[in-house]
Image 1: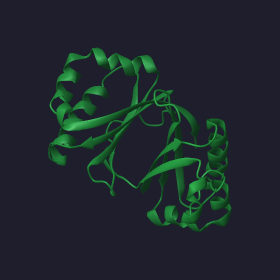
Image 2: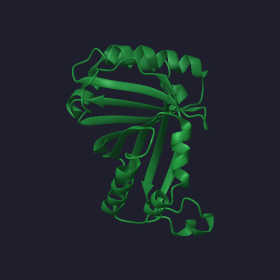
Image 3: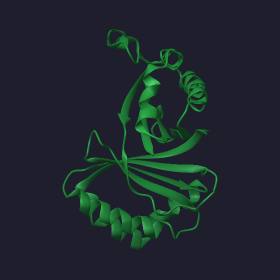
Image 4: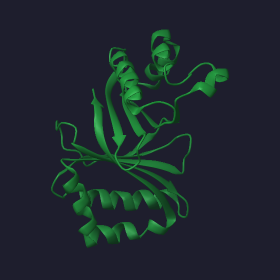
Length: 209
């Protein structure tokens, strides 16, 4: 199984236009061999930022998408994928990642996608990756016992090894924000807070396949 994770910043068009184009592309990708699932998220606290998370049976299935003219034409409405000379007309900026799953033990089976999804982009700056992953596991196991938790995973970028993404699904935003009042959880992450940089996104689901 292979995960693709793209962070998208809309720079040159209305967000409704980008969402329309992504839905068109998403519908097409869902028909391709090897497709497992997709999650399309919009950040509520960073307007114009989106995350597209997709599962594929293999990296070969995913990379084959770049050679499909119909799909390229859909994305050409907002970004030039195969013509660097046309990049000046791009309406979005994309940060591509093909991450590896580090930890995904805490999952409620067969539960629909959460109404609220938290995505954290984490850059580890001051400690070994193994130490950060140990602390994350400790925090993950604690959060999984809290009301409203559905599932979450930690993935690590293969192109930027210091960069991780934590993707956590909750039944509602109130359940997620209740974590701020938990002293034990605060103490767990205090072990690494001064050694990492976090970009936090409280997201709503804009597409789920």
